[in-house]
Length: 247
Image 1 (cartoon, rainbow, N blue to C red):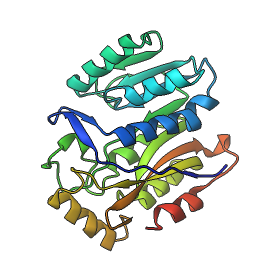
Image 2 (cartoon, rainbow, N blue to C red):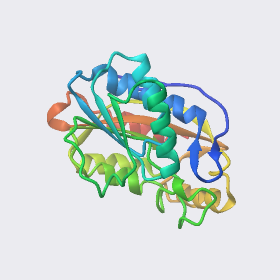
Image 3 (cartoon, rainbow, N blue to C red):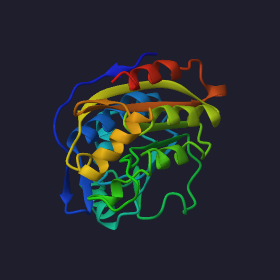
Image 4 (cartoon, one colour):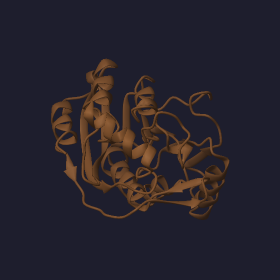
């Protein structure tokens, strides 16, 4: 298996002032990763859990475009985003397949699942006092991403940013028994929230410490399928590291 590079350009915005974050290119890329790395390889009896389903658009689009008929349980702590997601699920008649839970993913009992999927918050900052606090991913941007790799799901598909200590995330996967089964990569431009001086300056400091990788105003976003080593036949960790640190 090989990584795929997709090209896109634009700027992310929030739909509702600090309530529901929506980034068209990230949503499209996440959906494409779900289709290629997850849904097209699942059986119809498989169960998927999603951390932070947001407005539900990526999963809804993927369900419409694939033949996957299993169940997806999406967990979203933000009530505004959860309400939007539930409305869209009903609009597309997917209530029998995509279940939205307005609860904390980490504090709620979850069904046994074959896959965990997420586009977790990955904005690095020294604290959450930033323009969009919901996007804060911890000091190096990878705190939530790395926490998801400790939950022991057989397969974990995450979006990983090149300016959010990707080398640390790959190492975290290895520590918890995962191989990089496959990945896809797209270049993105720093947007409104990542260009906030407090955030941009912090990312520059991370780059000086070899924890962030970007060039000018461009960074890489990767959709990475982590699979438990006893289930995997390949390990593309070295290849992913090489690409994510190339900028």
